[in-house]
Length: 159
Image 1 (cartoon, helix red, strand yellow):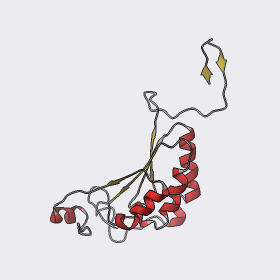
Image 2: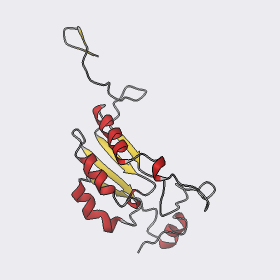
Image 3: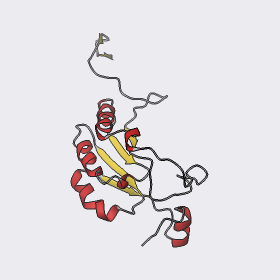
Image 4: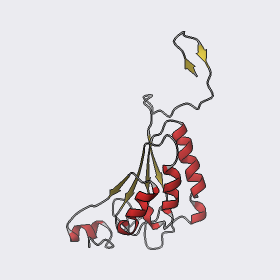
């Protein structure tokens, strides 16, 4: 409901904007595409919880592309202008560029970003740009090989 300058109430057919507890508009949305990752960084996947026998979500238990697209479109209709895609490691999904192309085409979206550990980025970079990705953030915990390997659960390699 909006109030015009004449102090008359006018009902409009528009969903209410998303706001926080202080009535500030929420403009950013983070969508975690999957829980799997090729690394085991101690701050993200602690060994006590993500042990060798840990069962990650099956594809059928995660949101599919149509559902993710509906979430994104609904959020944009409520005032979100920035979307960040994360994981786990989102580049483990070999078809991610199809999703990015659809999300980037949504009217009202100003910024589409992706967070990755960068391991697969060289094989995806051009495809991500062509699909409409605006920004990519690479998590790099250390430029020291030994520290990086320790942080990534022994799976990381800076080369």
